[in-house]
Length: 376
Picture (cartoon, rainbow, N blue to C red):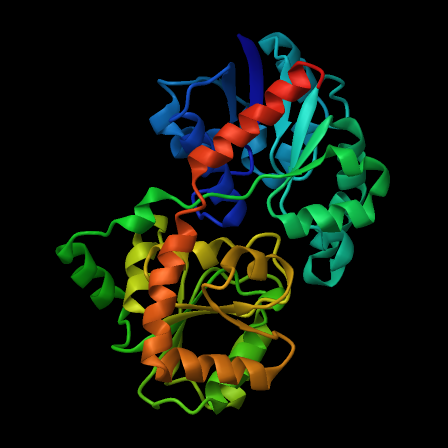
């Protein structure tokens, strides 16, 4: 069997979209008949995250320098080449934007969005520089490039038309945990610990500019909905997050808007189910993982009618213009006041979420890997 190294350095216990992709891909590979032998490339954190699969797949433990971002980047582009040679791999899967600069063998790459190039204002300067140069180099080096939505694939074709035949769309999946729930005792403990309000709308994701939270908060303040309905923000504080809290203070919404920070992944299904609705009018997404997580959990969704969120949601969500506060207001009012439409959205959302599985993702990824290995 051919030996395929999968670089999992970007996995973190504080899980975001890319981390979910990495764990989902390995989960999916563990459930299908494989035509190759995966080798998991792990740092210290990764060994803990992927511990359920260490008896299933071969794995390589990288040195501790890879436990920091700067150290990992240095290692990837220098001595990692030697480690891969010793592992006698036939192909390297680089699942997070960039391939090691000195790796010369066959490879596939996954690109999750194009914002580092198309929307650099959404990122810190160091990431802008690294990915602005690293992404074009990596696209050139790899035989195939996976885009995680059709919207992202089209964006890549516009940016890199000479490489258009390399780009293939393989959507994310949604974890099976969103179809189950935690125990009643855990629910009570979770609600009590976080002091969740009785009735609330929900946002899940990093607190950063492209998530459009300032406009969401302004629309929430103006929407004609009962004042006993709160807004809960779940996620870590990211780039330029302070303006979000400034907006809350200026509008006098401290009593109605709560930031509960990062939520452990296994508790997300319960949080979605507790909410009246999910608000995600993002300005740009490569995919929009929380949209299908909410749908799978039975939570009605409001999201943007642009970029990949429209593609992912289909007709199973309230779609709004993220640049129009009036349109976001309209959507929030419908989500709260139109019970018939909400019930329809819950049913349609669950059906839509069923279309996205990690087994499908893994099978399609395997197909691409085998095409590269067979020279197709």
